[in-house]
Image (cartoon, rainbow, N blue to C red; front, top):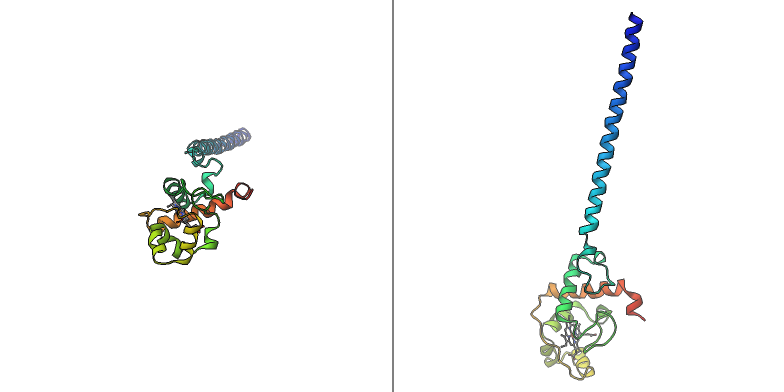
Length: 166
Ligand code: HEC
């Protein structure tokens, strides 16, 4: 009789172990499924699916938030006369601008280039003459906004070297 009890107890403990194992396995599978769902959601709502209309070759993830703001400002204010690459449109391509000019020069230039030319800024006068006295209008942009534009121009240079340097 005692023998039978201990056998039964053995069987029950084995069964209990099996159940615990099953529950643990289920929890893991569930967690995996949740993770998969989450991944799918980020894939669907991720930056990639945002707005591919502007600069489709430049992936959004490669841009910081500031550079993304800069891209928007650039597209709205500068693009009709400047490329972010090297080619001349109305004005010079802005590629490598920080190698030619400092931010301290660029900010007041963008805010009022005519004022700088009138004040006799030598570099400003020289490019003004070089570009057939085409006037760049003044922009009511803050220093930070102009910095964001230049950050975008710099990122553009790094991401698309094969297009910028043919
Ligand atoms: C209407 C055309 C036009 C627009 C719009 C324009 N620019 Fe210009 N930009 C020029 C021209 C032309 C020059 C060359 C100097 C001159 O003729 O005044 C120039 C020169 C520059 C330079 C000096 C470039 C160098 O290689 O030294 C910078 C920097 C610049 N622009 C930045 C900007 C930014 C930033 C914007 C947008 C906020 C902008 N420009 C919008 C026409 C424009």
